[in-house]
Image 1 (cartoon, rainbow, N blue to C red):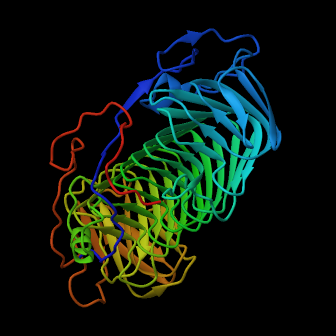
Image 2: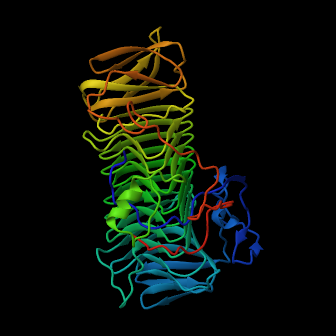
Image 3: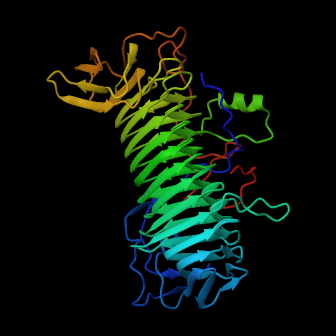
Length: 512
């Protein structure tokens, strides 16, 4: 049974990102009419040549700039601007037309866009340090998309103050790097963000991060893309008081390194696809949370009831990569389905119920990869019987100490898998593609050692010490329902065809 948690915020707007192999552009997009110019000999190195899995536009992959582009040389509270489309006004830099702008130097103030609805603004950070103590450092409230390129070998810094000054009736911008519509961050340079007011990076449509090195310290959320978040080939480090990476739509992580050293919830979205990369999460709440959205006008009782439903099109799917989760609440929490199709997943959940290492409302299916989760028996769940990869569910009579190694060895003493649990536990779920039907294995943890001969599907060691059913999919529990969504659907159940990140404004109420 799902625990009551008031975490939902608005109806589902977008559901999924299509994946396609795309090439990299050597042309520089200068406006929305797709005019291109040849790179000059002084053009920065093209850092968009790495192989990508996701479907990205030429704008997303463009990292080039040339001597003909507008240059903005920052110096404390002033700027030397060479070229068209940018002005220095009232202590801020105002960008008024589509194009590429190369920024360097230190600045006390704000970068503002005042461009047309279909304009794309390309900001090249060539070693900048921008601080604004009364608002965001970047306020892109207009335009179709902002592309920020971090020049290879440079370190760039954005910071804000602890309070923002707003005009009457206004509540935006509300992030150190704020983009009203779509945002792409690319290039192999570094971006450090010290966020002291709310969110560090926020895009109110789609957010794409490619190749970049990003380090965030935030008093609020670290990264939010309202409609979707895509991460590929990036290196991201997060210390946040609120959520790490979050979206009200689809999240796709294809590759890279994500180290969430501290966050409320680590990863959060309606659908979450992890296809590769190395992901480490330390969360004071759920480690990974897949949840659908409910209108803010719903009552608390309606929100709680909806949180216990099987939200059929909500899911977490892991197909590759290495994922380590250390969560104070649920390690993996899906209000719909969980699919482990590959990769290596280690989860250390809460040390007391009702939070558990693996929590879902619909179905949890494992078909490949390596999986180990540790937690408590109360409300504990294991994989569904429809799983095609063998798994072992283990109940311990007493708590196994934190730091203890769970190890599975075959009849010859060879190690099949091992995992050192971050916290003490009384319950574990273990699965590997090396667990062969009919073979006998030894499972050790602390002073516990048990043999099990594998039958196809689920296998159990020990008995639950908790009275009553062990939860959906657990011994004594009701079989879960729900099938993998073949295509994303809208709120009316109609299939949505998508080739890439969804675009457009959302009508849902925004939460920071």
